[in-house]
Length: 458
Image (cartoon, rainbow, N blue to C red; front, top):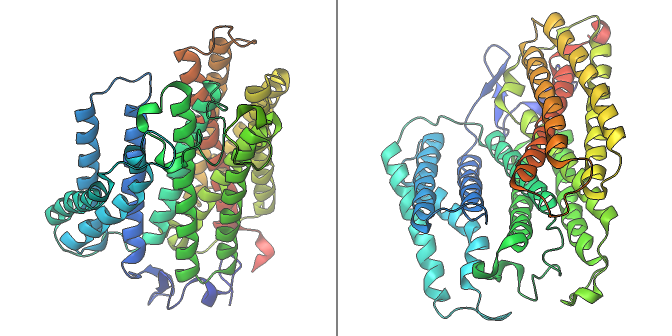
């Protein structure tokens, strides 16, 4: 027996997966153990902390250290609270959430442990590390105690964890956009080390200007890499759909290739040298790195969707006479968005192809209006498609206007004095919204495969 997704029903929902067949024959969400929900809470807390830490440490932002520490502590408490609510396990769920988050945060704690020269570690490291772990567990434990015990409010932890991975990737894309806008892609001359230091031990005191932007981007990349690996493990552990496991495996492959590509963009060839003269930076790899980052984000969005509760509980696919056409149109729209993103990457890195980028933006706008209006008019019986179509109309309109605003801020030729603050935020916002549009193009294509089907498919 096949479901509306075209996959054998027993391979999609059944014992041993996060979903099982309900009494009425539909998909009923049931708890699938605590691990997925703790992963979502712990990684989600970490991503939120890194976002706050990144913003408050930006050279252009002046935030007192005590305020940064207070905000990070508050996020830990909130993370413990949400972890406890998701699992229903109170204090212990909060402690586990805080401990997991603190373990992940060791990736940035190393910036306080590195000594004055490569390979050196401050003497207090053996005290700071366990103290850091205990403090994280205690703060999140407070949040868990406040939440208390009760029925789990998020039985689908794997879907929530995938969403965290997508948000972490979006944060990484924004950080990468800022690196490009600040022309800081080569601020750190070596890779995988940073000026001879182990990447995770490079001192925070030396992260200023372009070095901060580039080095923070590398650290965020490591967090996204770890998140992707753990998410793939979780998917293989709980999901019985072979095609979803395939998506997770491709995500792992892409994140590995993307990391290597980002490093070779700086060095040109594999090398542990720290001498700038030994490097052969590649602008072509910079363009490819930017494009693949967006493609990877689209894949993470797709994983989030197919692992989500709404994917399973949407109900049977509705038979629509023009379903085949809608699927084809959504695929064409997705391809156009990816091409436009690629042209944008060429423009940003190589300062060429402006007319092609503008021309494609007009085509994307027209196609977005076409598919968006079809979603509005044809699919009142398929609300997920309708909502996605509304979002695409709004996002594309804003993105089109924002593109011209970015062009007005930056100009046709780069400013001799380097990018201004308005250049930075306008171009980065334009790039980030492009990623959001890509996410919705992915969702539209996925929903036309899930929520509707041609008349003759049954």
